Amino acid sequence: MIYRLILLSVAGLFASTSSWAAGVLVLMSQTSAPYQEVADTFRAKLQQERPAVLVAVEPSLERAESAISADTRLLVSIGMRATRAALALNTRVPVLAVLVPKDSFAALVLSANEIRRPISAIYLDQPYSRQLAMIRLAFPERRRLGVLLREQNRLKLDALLASAKLQKMQVSGELISNTDEIVPSLEHLLASSDLLLILPDALLYNKNDIQGVLLTSYHYHVPLIGYSEALVRAGAIMALYSKPQQIGYQAAEVVSRSLGASLPAPQYPKYFTVSINQQVARSLNISVPGEMVLQQALQRWGQEQ
Image 1 (cartoon, rainbow, N blue to C red):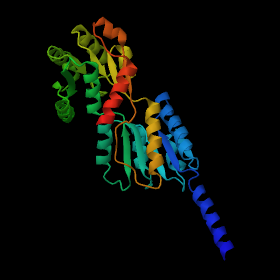
Image 2: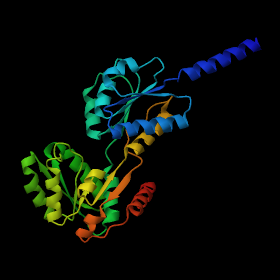
Image 3: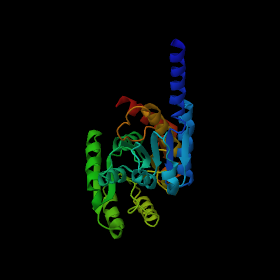
Image 4: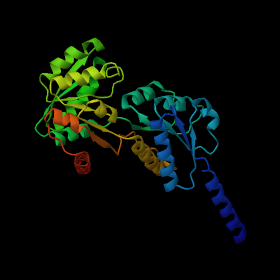
C-alpha cells in the first residue's frame, strides 16, 4: 500500500511538472526589435526563476489560436495588436498585456465587455508623479510646466494637475481640437512656461509635427521633456521611459508570482531609464545633473513614497 502511494505521488509530481511544459504563450504585435527584446528578456528571466515553466513565443498572430495548448496557463501579449488578438481567442486563459498605453488598454477592456477571464497589464506610460518628480529634481528652480494636449485628453490634464499640486508645481495646459492649432497654441503656452512636457500621443506628436514642436520650444528657450530616447536624440533635453528589456524583466517577475495565483492589478513600469541631451542643455545654458545621478535620485524618491 505504501509503495503504491509513493508511485502515485511520484506520478502526480511528474504530471504536475509536465502540465507546465508549455505554460506561458507569448504573442507579439510585430517582430521588430523592441517587441523581440521584450519577449527575449521575458523568456530568459522567467526560465531563470521558474525552470519548469517553458515559454512559447508565437510571432504570428494568425497562428495564435493553434499555438494554444491544453497546458497553456497564461497569455502574455506584447503591444496592442497582440492584446486584441489575445482577447479574441476562444479561450479563458488569463492575459497579461505589456507595452500597452494605459488609455488604449482601458478602452479595449471596456469595449470587450464579453470578456470573462482575468486580464492585467504593465503599461507603457510612466506615472505622472514620477515624471514630475524627475522634472523637480532636475530643474528645482523651474516650476511652471506647460503641456499641450488634444481636447479628447482633458482627463489626462486633470490627472496631471492633481499630481502637480501634490508636488507644488504649476501646470498650464492648452487643449486643441486639430493639428492646425499646434503652433499658435504652443507659442501661447511657451510664453508663460519654464518647461514643456509632451506626453505620448500618436495623433498630436507624429513624425510630421514633432520637429516643429521641438524647434518652437528651442526658439523660446524652453526645454522640452519627452517620453522616449528617440525624442532626446531629436532635441528634447530629457526623457523618462522604460526600455523593452525593463518591461520584459518586470513581466517575468509578475508572471513568476502569478502562476497558480491571481494576476495583480494593471500597473505602471517598475523599472525606468532617464536620458539627457547635454548638448541641448549647454546650448540653452542650462545645467542639469548626469543621467545616473538623476536616475538614482529618482529611484530614492520612489522608495520614499
